[in-house]
Image 1: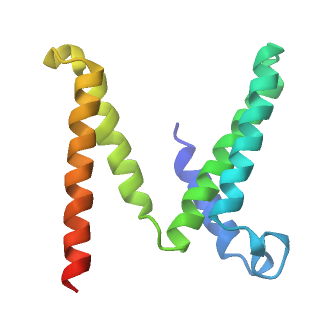
Image 2: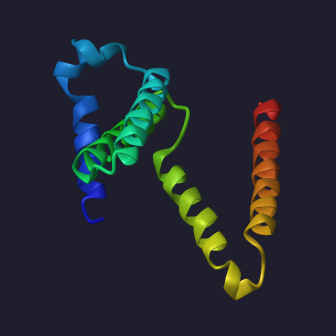
Length: 131
């Protein structure tokens, strides 16, 4: 897990590279990465069925690579804030994983979190409409 920051650095370098600005990947946008993720997941499912750990691990790496690139491109397109994605993920799953401690069901926590997201979204819309 210590390599996740290193991977994110590689992704940033890749997207800030002069080579990428004038080459094949210049036309890659978030939609292209969504399509690539679907393709890589399909390939991973095939390797999983074959019980082939070497190729499965390779395909899982491709999924992670495309996902990290998707996050970077979405941030470049000003559609997300990368730090917010990780903060939300931590908040979302740390709450759900602690469900035994709080004696709540995963589904109950999920409903509450969806309500919180809805409120946050509505607040964001109110701010936009005030401008």
